[in-house]
Image 1 (spheres, rainbow, N blue to C red):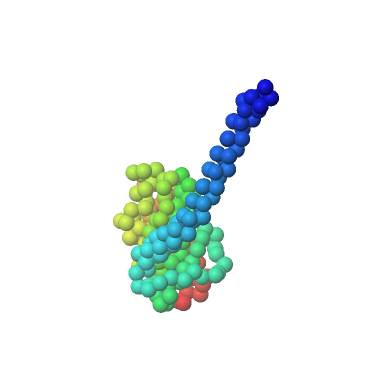
Image 2: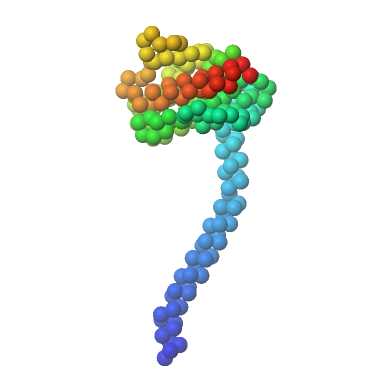
Length: 184
């Protein structure tokens, strides 16, 4: 009778514990196998995006510098072609991540929005289009107010938060470049 009670009361618990342990071990093993692959792909994608905004570069090396507010990373071209500055500023739905390429003369070579997934489709995302981002190319100083120092770059009507996030990202990249001492 006791043996039958054990089977009824404790056997399901033991089976569930064993199932949980096996599932945990499988999950941990999968994590160990996939983590290096994911990191490699993430690095390759980031390097490809950097190459888009600073096409004269032949490779990139992360710089160990004091980052200004909003700047998340700075990479310099291994051939001295310039730098790529990544920034993140709050848009309408969350952070908008922007990569800005800057050559050794301090001119913006290109701008790419790498993450604006939470912005309003069809409205906020207009501030991330190549047409809008092209307004920054060739500039060494930008402003979004009349009489400000630099070339005025207006935002997209109806996409104020996203436009401001992109503008602030590019502006912070130029400030970070200046903080580095300009020409590298």
